Amino acid sequence: MDLIRTRLSLPLLFIGLSALAIVMAPNPIALAAPAARHFRIEASSFQYTPAAIHVNPGDQVTIDLVATDVVHGLYIDGYDLNLTADPGQTASLSFSADRSGSFRFRCSVTCGALHPFMIGKLNVGANDLLWRAIGLGLLAISASVWIRPHSGRAPTPGCAPRTSVDDVA
Amino acid sequence: MKAERFAWWCVLVLVLGLPLAAVLTRSNPEAIELHGRMADTGGWMPGDLTAQVGQPLQLRLTSDDVVHSFAVGQSALPAIDVLPGQWTTTTLLFDQPGKYTFYCTRWCGPNHWRMRGTLEVTGTAAEMITPTTPLYVALNLDLDAPHPSDVVPSEKPSAARGAALGLKADRPVTPDRAQSPALRWQQLRSSSLTENLSDAQVWDLVALSWRSNTTSARLAEGQQLYAQNCAACHGETGRGDGVIAPALQKTLTLPGLALTGHETIAPSDFTDARHRLGASDAIFEGKIIRGGMGTGMPYWGPIFTSEQVQALVDYLWSFQFDQ
Image (cartoon, rainbow over the protein chains, first blue to last red):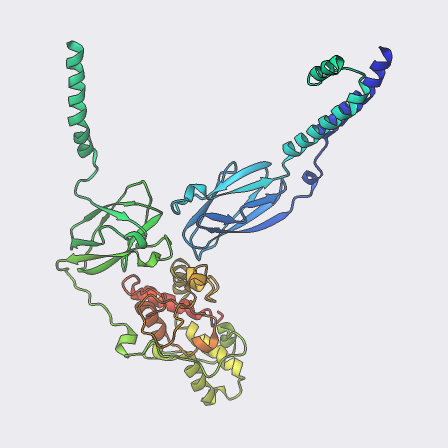
């Protein structure tokens, strides 16, 4: 019994520490020095090019909005910023990306039938939650693979019926 | 029985009360409803309005599709945004009879400029203003004739450098609005005043004389008009590379065929010295007022006042001449 406990607790300790590291480790991208970033977004019916922009938290972001067919707008959710551009009159907007996360931007001027679907995305910082969740998932998979051969003959519920079939044979 | 009677009363109140409430709550029953639609699907509805001099014309505006804007040509009325799902009211008052054009000022589609309607104002004014004849009409100029310049400057002429030369090169306002900078340069070059000057310096004098014919306020007005009305096709830099320009590439592919009026050609490049320096104020004015026949260029005659056209023409020269 003691033997099993020591054999189990060492990997468990290691897995626990790894999990802690995955959850708590600081994101190296988030530590990058804030920079000035300049984007030119072309708005046409009914899309933005580029449709997704990535910045780091703390960056000074400038967006030039160029409408290429009709009047379009750009409203950034979460930052509460609005911009309207007429064709031939490039509109510009500058803000500090001080909130991290993913934010939708969408057209704020009714520009046609598919206007509600004219959306894009502003990513401030990497998507930490997703990467940490993937890390934890991978850790869980590798832990289950690693622990099973060491944990003796503890049958899993899925294996139980097959053992009984073997016994009968 | 009591409950049934109550139900009947409810139905009666609803059937009679709802239309009554709708009629009573309408802000001004005399107002004319004007619907905005893209030119391709009908334009303004109705497209013809009538009014009387001195009598207010009330309008209730809404849009059936996208964002439009309502403005009346050659009037000081500021443009009013016309939004889908919203009613905007406005009151117009005219003191001059005539045929006005009302139009959309927000780019609402490729045929945005075709979204125009007419507003006929009848009656007599206390003081009748006779419209001025544009110079190109008075001079009977052929606007479609090519006007290449034989001489072009090696660099962009500058009015400031011309002023530094200390020579007087004022351009009389009339009748030389029909004179091209190329002709002016040749006159100055052959004059004894400029014997000691280089060709580029003579061009600077030309720039100075064109600059001295306008004011900063007029240039600023011209710049604003250009941004709102011209830059979408001719480009913010004047190179003819506006956002709509790719859609206006030459559609007239077969030479010799009669024009149908649906052709378009690439917007002209205001920075092209050979093409521009051979033109004059009068030609620019004419092209703006009449539009480019068979090119896709709208006619702005019923939209801009003659002062606005002049401001625009002055601003167009700034693509050729530095301050």
